Image (cartoon, rainbow, N blue to C red):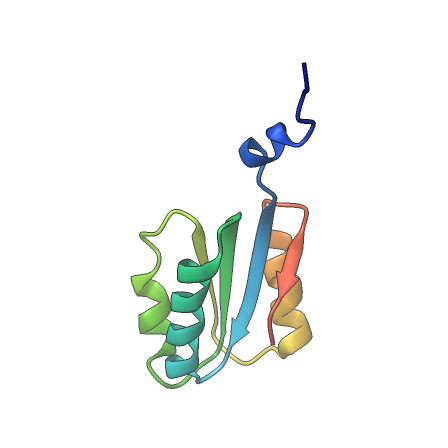
Length: 101
């Protein structure tokens, strides 16, 4: 009898935190979230950090809050890319993180 040692992999999908700081880029943010939802087959959580946007980006991010795997963080001013990444990293519940620029 042959035992397939890889049979357990389908039930143990890798979980990742995808961390995306955004600043005044509503159209790109919408596109990236749509593509992540469409093409990411692994279990994930998405952490979106609005870095003090003055356009409608925060309204878009708020519309994602009902999705259980999306967390939104809002900064009242632009704290910088590194700071926003650190914020997202501390909110992540999963040990493997993927940072987007």
